[in-house]
Amino acid sequence: MEEKKFDLNSIIGFALIFGIIVWMFYLNQPTPEEIEAEKAKQEQVETEKKTEEKKTSDFVTESQPIVVNPQDSLAVVNAKSQLGAFAYSASLPSAKDQYTKIENEVLSLKINNRGGYISEALLKNFKTYDSVPVYLIKDGKNASLNINFGTTDNRILNTKDLFFEPKVTKNGDNTILSMRLKASDSQFLEYRYELKPNDYMVDFTIRSQGLQQVINSSQTINLDWKLQGMRHAKSASYENRYTELSYEYDGGKDDYLGQGEFTDDEEQDVTWIAFEQHFFTSILLTDIPFKTAAFTSKNIANSSDLDDKDIKVTKEFSATMPLELQGGELNYAMDWYYGPSDYKILNSYKRNLDEIVPLGWGIFGVINRYLFIPFFTFLSSFLPYGIAIIIMTIIVRIILSPVTYKSYLSQAKMKVLRPEITEINEKHKDNAMKRQQETMALYGKAGVNPMSGCLPALMQIPVFYALFNFFPSAFELRQKSFLWADDLSSYDTIAQLPFEIPFYGDHISLFPILASVAIFIYMMMTTGQTMQTQQPGMPNMKFIMYLSPLMMLFFFNNYASGLSLYYFISNLITIGIMLVIKNVIIDEDKIHAKIQENKKKPKKQGKFQKKMKELMEQAEQQQKTNKRK
Image 1 (tube, rainbow, N blue to C red):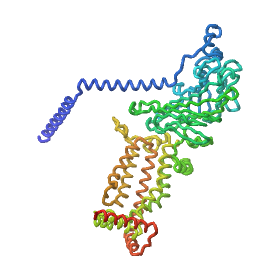
Image 2 (image 1 turned 180 degrees about the vertical axis):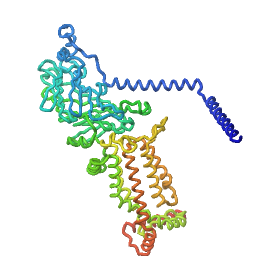
Image 3 (image 1 turned 60 degrees about the vertical axis):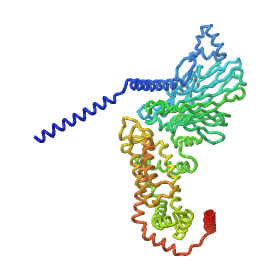
Image 4 (image 1 turned 180 degrees about the horizontal axis):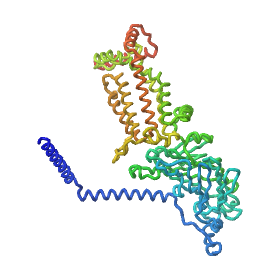
């Protein structure tokens, strides 16, 4: 009976709870005004999405082309009135939207008759995060190349609106495509593409023949190149961090525009321009430097306007370069590169293109180029990529272990002196100057340098920052899996959230959690070793101890899982090394005895120490004088 009674009470209890929940939902149901507001919000979001899609589709603007039937005399006259000498090109059979395809083992290009420029660039050996082929240019909608020029009969023409005549030939194993914008059979503007086997670099020539009396040499001739960076990665916002316009100028210097919206029109003698994305890059190179160049970069992947999943393009780039006539003709030898942002591939061209890969400036880039890239390449040649990261991390930490030892030894000495320092602080709590004098005197007698714990940590910064740049830039990690991470170049996901947390995201990554726990334990060990009474004006170390892992947890949740894996293993090894140092190598009793022995020895003061002592004594005397007044 009691069991039935309990069951009945349970049923009644659950019924009451259910009723309360239903009542709460009823009380909190949205008002008609709130429903209308939510509907308006959804409509606004849809409008923004459509606007964004329209921006993408309207990026390459085209005017209505002129096509002429040679048998239609009126149409011929009309074409001549608009196109002048180039009305001839509009009367040829090639005057139609038709493309010519050239390809090799790694790259496929489609060049449209209209404009003569590449309307599709497909990288054959790569897929996007959702298994779609990687296009740098697709359907001619996200890129354009145009020469804007004036004619001697006072017309302004744009090559993107005119029709070129294609012709494919072979030069050994190389495929050559000639696209000619004709004023007659012997007068033309030519784009010449030469594609070599297994190569992402395409030889590209712009030249004219017989156009001295057609092109107006007194007007500026501009080459305009535009491109929208198409999304290829799982996180568009993360990919966008590494998407930017960079260029080489002034005989080998390189620069970039940055992550926001920028315009730069001051550069001279530009030799290459790169519209770079995280792992893929489009580059225009020229043997004859552009005298000047103007650049713009516009950020499209703005998370305040669109959800990450709705972003199709990351940034819009444009470059405008004036072309110079030589003897009344154009003659520029150039190259196109459509391919991966792989350091080894870019560096193999010996044209300073490796600067496109963001390996860090100064010493950080040097460490990556000459140490970590060759070492990781060697390890990954016979190990899985995740294991290679772990092995490289272990070796780096072992090499840096003497630095860790020096840092921990300094902390141990400070710990031994802590009671005496506390006593000094209590004794002179109202006299900061005296407190500082006696503390420095104690350090001098004990032979302890309070900065010796900081210097080893500073020595490790170049290595840590170099690796911070290395892992997100390592093309080898792209779409390589390890454990639960399906792509070491992007974030790992162990749970998908039904909502988005600001600055964190809509997913939970495990590697950042493990790295944050490891760094928290490490900071507890190091902070506990040197923790002293909180001094006025000094940072709260306990607060920093809790804040740093939390910041790492949020910051790295959307970062490359390979980098989080490195930090997790690195901190884990550091914790192990510190435990060995603490429990096996360092004997605090011996340190204490040695410090006491050092305190008994007479210490010779150097000139700097004497000067500092004199200054502190003068300051103390001045303080006493001021108090008397």
